[in-house]
Length: 114
Length: 115
Image 1 (cartoon, rainbow over the protein chains, first blue to last red):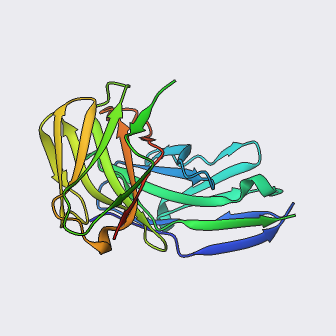
Image 2 (cartoon, chains in turn green, yellow):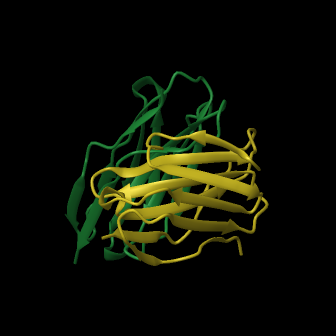
């Protein structure tokens, strides 16, 4: 069975702070795919990143970075120098090579205060 | 611009009614999904379709059925709506591309209230 756990329900930070959103996953598959999505107050989910299980290289995109560690089954997301516009709900998701089903975690609500 | 369109943004229905939520995608994607989103529970998969007339149950299929007669359209049916089905419903689509596994694209959501 596949499962995604986002233990942090809600995080509040002040602008310019760094913040890390945790994601832990479970799967029996050896080939799988991990995703992060952002859901701003408008409601529509916005894709942020995809990572394949055989590629453990960390990725940086502007103020966003992702740390993928197979040894701990984690795919954490860090926002550096957070901004008010980063306020949203962030979802981590998983799908395996054997099925196109996409399973989401419960999400982390990030509030960035000015 | 790729698009997943859900027929209604807001719906109010009465208990016991049969409810249809429609979703259309214009990207020629094989896969389509229906999720419901509730506070604290994230996105839970109701049904998944990987081809026309093909479907697979998700984690919470009880009380729902689906229909996919054409590739671009995926309908979610509440056979007899109940108040515990009041929720935000999200449709998504993705290509069947096992090598690259591109992301899923989402509609704007339908907020359904059952009274």
